Image (cartoon, rainbow, N blue to C red; front, side, top):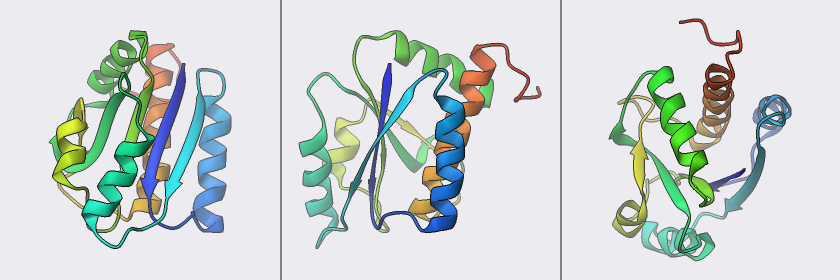
Length: 147
């Protein structure tokens, strides 16, 4: 199963890219990550339209948003397992600096929050990869996650 991550904003700087590459390399045993980095739009609405254009009708879309649901890693690992067992493509969306338009929220199948805090979108890219790696590790009985 291929996982796509759509993120609005600038391409990652070298430090962020180095961390991202490390987690992508670790994730290769379970999945491939496909990136779609969309440029900042003139408005949140423009960014929303650009995000929706990249989605397929049958994609399972997980929106990263501080107003979403928060669960433990173990619970999220089982949600990930359920999402991956679905035949649809799994797509994570990270909005731009001003969040996402309501049209993107209404398209999302699940809204996930790491915290009530707001994080820079480039850092969120790495955090998402790390959590995906941790969740896959949980599912495979690996030792990366200590519960």
